[in-house]
Length: 338
Ligand code: ATP
Ligand code: MG
Figure 1 (cartoon, rainbow, N blue to C red):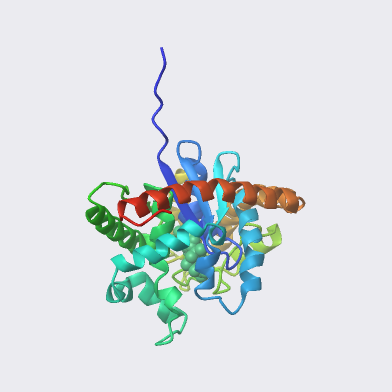
Figure 2: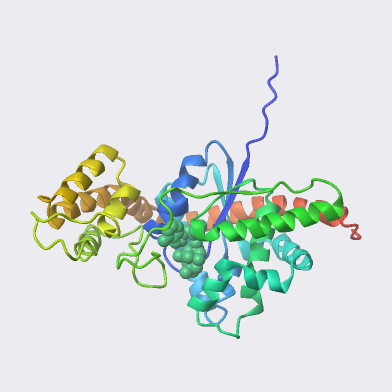
């Protein structure tokens, strides 16, 4: 008896190659990607064209980081035998889809996107926003739909961008009168956005407050030692505050032993547990998380030809897939195919 296997649901995510990935990326998205790569068909996009939207003056930085971020994926446990890693700029169908989709979204809608608004402010663009930057949510919609992805594991800052993608999908489906494109669902972890080592709202590549996936044991120890706790918790015997205490936020995000974290919280709140002891727990947790990643990364970094070959293979596979979707959309819109 033959069994008909239904195709696996498709995941698409990507990262801007603007710097090394850090534990915020791990908590926000990479952990889910590693966990889901066997039950789903997964594509990961090195979004170098999206990185250009605010780094056009530094193409060398973007090029270098394509390889760096690829190594970070392998370090985190992305298995290139089951996950396809590909390079955005080498997939022309994505650029063509972006150009088509621009006609299904208004400039004012793009300007109202809360993520874009805050990113424009953070980058100090004021009125000089590169057109490509304003339109990057459209290119993200092209990326997601070109793979017909239904699940996108991302950090919470990305939710408005997935909503924007679904608006475009609905307009295209309405226009072409066929359910050509499936809607995409964001998979956002409960832990929310990981704050920086300095306690700022977001651990970020560009704010100098990140712990990279390849951090050494000394870097981990140093980062934890300097970490912000409860400023009123002066002596170990004093009761301390757990809320807003970065050490506990990180324990919540990375310590699998929930009972241990709950016990530490109770003792800290009651008084009698010093910052030094809690920090030692966190240091051990982070070291256990990062050490295997650091070791895997070093092994792959010693084989740059293997990494390039993997990217070439992944990009070739993705090129076929994205071109097939583009052909379907072109046909549905009645564009000539000579
Ligand atoms: P850039 O400053 O270049 O925009 P970034 O650190 O924001 O870099 P992205 O490549 O834009 O990284 O985002 C990659 C993915 O990681 C996204 O899904 C994003 O939501 C997630 N992410 C980034 N920083 C964090 C964080 N501190 N906590 C949780 N998720 C995060
Ligand atoms: Mg970002």
